[in-house]
Length: 313
Ligand SMILES: Nc1ncnc2c1ncn2[C@@H]1O[C@H](COP(=O)(O)OP(=O)(O)OP(=O)(O)O)[C@@H](O)[C@H]1O
Ligand SMILES: [Mg+2]
Image (cartoon, rainbow, N blue to C red; front, side, top):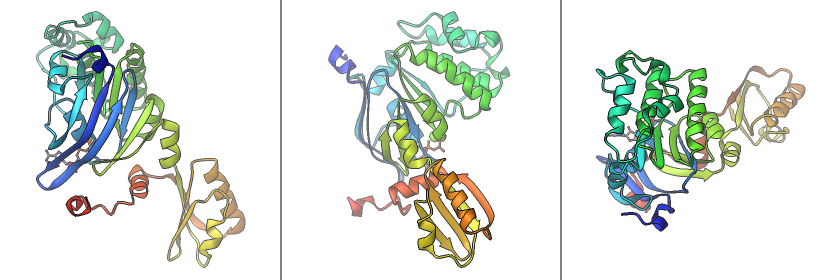
């Protein structure tokens, strides 16, 4: 069993790899998480977030590498109620009410929280007597959170917990989650949204194509991937003139189409003003937050081939 020293070691993922056939879904992931930390796993579709989370929860066995949760294996930690998971897929037992389901899960663990308290914390009290099949998307997510929480785990692992929710639902969910995290829990959640990771995590681990491509505090990660692009149609302008515009870090021209890359506002605002002042003939102007996928490809310089590691190792 875990000693107090190993419990303090938090969560350790060491050199994790996982392939499906010859497709390398996770390619050497190393993450250490301190007890009490809230960590976001951020990445585009197919980055390997769910595969990593499933390995953390012991649902998938890694091809190589190890997972320790407070000094224990995932299987032992789950069994002991040390870790609670909220997965991306899977349905709730339909014939039970939310309260009955949470109470049933509570009965499986040695030191569960009080069921009414969990319902209150997760904002499920209002519909606790409804069958789990009769819930909205947001209510279902809250019920899932209640189930993950009732064993009073030290670690909560949430795979895109707000995926089905509207803006208000997200905010409510995270308000509940904050109350939970404030009890000293370690929380790991997967998300596609930089804003969500920024708002609710102490630390962001960026994943792309099965790898960790950046790991740090939200402000740092935001600065790296939170850029904007300005697109415009502008014939006959020299690239060097474009790169020297204030706030512009990169200029890309394809024919008359122009893409300027800037850090987030206010740099992008200055760039746009300067562009229009110097080239009033620019048309079809569009300013967008750089997509995560784009930002990741930039960061990794990855050509997208995930079958080539053996030769590159
Ligand atoms: N059971 C499986 N069999 C084959 N390939 C799989 C399987 N599960 C996942 N993959 C592939 O592994 C890669 C990583 O998938 P994973 O579900 O971990 O990504 P993700 O980051 O969670 O993506 P999303 O944001 O879409 O949930 C994807 O390319 C996916 O198609
Ligand atoms: Mg996923």
